Image 1 (cartoon, rainbow, N blue to C red):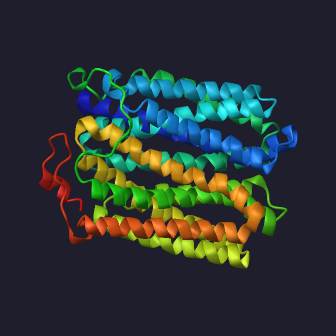
Image 2 (image 1 turned 90 degrees about the vertical axis):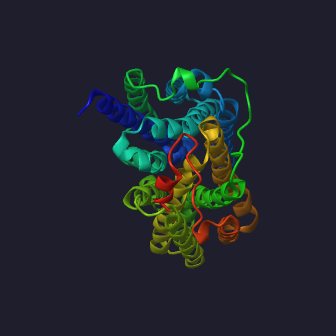
Length: 414
């Protein structure tokens, strides 16, 4: 294997592993909140506020660091994200009040927001030639896989470790230190000739194909809102219908949704963009209908099936959306377009978690869950209509990838 290919393989692998580690850390505390609630006397509303701070950190990083990687390069910004994650672990280890949790989750959000757009684009740019066509799918799958494995690890920790609120974060801190060392040895994707003087700009949609971009974003928001709803609803559902369930059960169900998303992106990566989006929207809608039935009947079996089904559909849809955005967007606009996409997605994921606590208290679990299922179904339907207006379902072709790739080769993946 030529030296260049070895460097690309190594850089691609380190980038993806870093994404998994950062995103796993964002969901790791989910099953541990029950321990914090007992130790610090937290209410459900205060736990929701802790999550809201995380979402604020994600959006702040996506907005503030939007154009920075075009000036300093992708790798330095990823290192900043890893440093924020390490700092978050350190604060969690010292936590003895809700103030520490706010600070730790804000740092977690900054790390995740720094990674989302930049790491996805970096993975696409540094991918070895044999994986280049599906690099965006691999990067997005790593993102979602991290979100899925985080609550599973957290749940296992609460079940089998003596002090999971310390041991888990200590292990993650050690992993982040190793990743910093590895990332320093990787290839910088952005050449100096392609860098531009720093000028802050807010994330914005690509200058071309905005109708397609809007449709992809609406479907993506629907999918992430569904997974966000699962993260917020599962503890309430289990507490209502299965009061003796453990934190591990909650972590496994939420992890099953995110895991299904990652599996769908990888297992069906050769599915064309149009067919992947159509299948993803259909499977995700079926999962939402299952979720409504699970809440109505109080069925844990239906609820688990709904989590996996919605995850599979979301994975198919979001993987193809990132692939399409990367292909349609010029190099100078690519990070900005992907960052805005993630801003929309994680706003959509945060709203259900934050709002569920209020809606459940005011109207009950069934009404709260049903309302958000209808919300997600409506956004998915609007996205399908927008893509139809843009000609997606009529077999329109991608015009180019903004970096010199022939349109014909990209159209093959439709």
